[in-house]
Image (cartoon, rainbow, N blue to C red; front, side):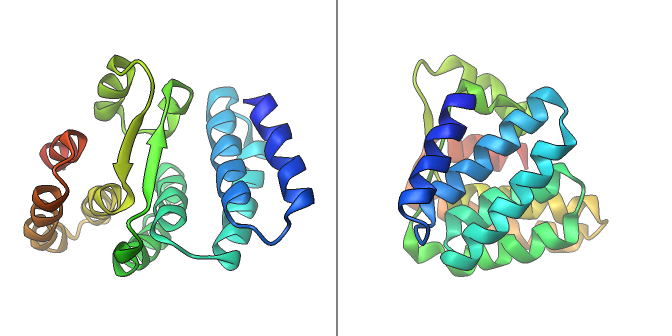
Length: 171
């Protein structure tokens, strides 16, 4: 991850107004911060996520930042970002995860990623619904979580990604 972090920092220096290297840098800081239990890296991740969001909010960055917030038990702010991601779903952002991303992923989903040789690619909207349902459960708003299930199922059926079916089952 350190090599990726350096590469994204260099890319940001060359293209400071581009969102995607900041998005990816934030994800690298997040993963490395979890692996090392390093609070400083997690703070860098949050700062970088926020900057990326300011440059260009899309369903991918909203979902990734919400995952970060969820992992840090900031469920209300995660919900706000997930609702924004769902509003932006027409951008059809993909999220990809490799084995280096294990700590960022929900525990019940890690095994499926580990079984893939390369990477898992999934539409941001599917993770958005998944984390939104989990966030509502965490704050005790089960009725809101249940109400989302039909819309989530509809997205899974439309996209037909096998990992989407798994997330639906886990929710």
